[in-house]
Image (cartoon, each protein chain N blue to C red):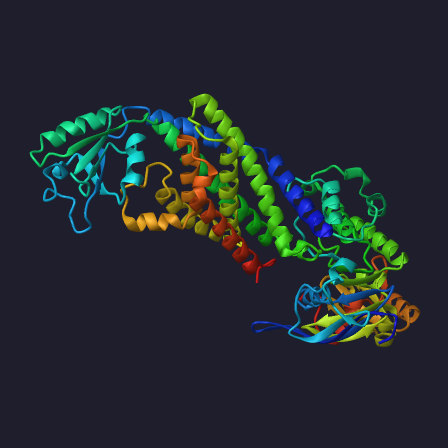
Length: 295
Length: 343
């Protein structure tokens, strides 16, 4: 551990009766970075993050914040956004903010917070009447009322439409730019890839890979993926290209995109619906586990 | 300390806003008890209960039947045992019972209220029963209308429901929907949260009941012999103890159905044995002992003593002490058992 480590997690284990939800996780979160726990639903991400938040007691293992075990004042210094949170009925956005703000000894100016999370347009609205994106922004603002050094976001964009998700990512980038440390769980590969400086891929309570997302992909893959409609598959019979069918599309992995496209043209495959994409974290997950993120 | 008070105040304020803005349930809390008191006043405005009620003081080994005195064989009269004349005589004076017979007095005597027509009738029955003559003692006192007696009962019962369900359901709902889990992630401590819920509920119940009491007094001319301040003290302590009781029930549950069932199991016997609608004088001893364990019994005894007899707080040490003791026990138990999240 060095002075830059915010959170140090060692051999973390959590058992619920017969279920081993988390099975010996170790990782470090560096100060000022965004750290991602990436994996499918049920992988143990939320259990892990709740232990890091100090809300669940580990069965065994240790968690240290800035070199110290999580003490009683830890809650004053961290901000938490749960996967889903109910708020009190009949309270407006501003009343919710004032309430949560009053619970902390150190408080951030609410005006600043409102501007940061873009809440201006619905401050006096009953929190039950917010859209999904507005609600997540309010919950983020609540997680930030104490100006935390460390922010936990548990699946923050689950259930949001793509536009709201992108807006939320912008907010997270702003927070990161302000020097905060963020720990995030997600099962969206794009979210992990775009926001996280470092990720661990978790499956069945264990870490199966770790690193910087772009480097992780570079380490495991040196190719790209060409996608053509599955109906074109018979035309490739005599070609050197090998495709894997995936639903309505045929995926062709190749290290040399130019040569592959030439081969497709030579085989008479229509390029009208061709898609070329780089390898993703989901591909990596499939490579490592032999199954998809949502299986 | 200051931070703790700020947290309690913030949580109590947030909860109060939630309650006050829930217009339908607020309206119900105000209107229902008034309607209930008026309804009961209407139903019981007739000549009263047909049965005669007579208290008997007799040696422990004696049976309350014809062997003691032929009058005790009168089928239309309910005879029940009292231990002391001091306790029984005020009931004759207030027309709660129609006659008192003391076989341990020398000579054996009966006490009758000269302002009670039923008492006069019973005197004739004694004379005509053919038993040994009983010495006649006279006492006086104005009759208390049933509505004066039942109104504190109904308001107290209603307050009990508001206390138990008001706090119980809300905390269970908060736990079920994960709001408690969110609060647990803040520096708010369990006892601060519970105290905030309790204070918010207490303040709202007091405000609602002052309004309801005022309305009943205006509409029905309820009797009020004692001090309003004393009544407020008694009601505050009574409500506090019943809210604390609700905290114990809601300490761990995460199912509103289960909480509702348990709260019904607690509130139904309270409604029956605490003397809401009818006096528990003459009820089996076991029921009276059971009633002693419920805060509502002590609230009603103290409130009726103040309202009907003008008793001061100094003479209400027992009910006040019991309510204070129950408050402390329930609050402690509620805080120890409390869990933020469902397992």
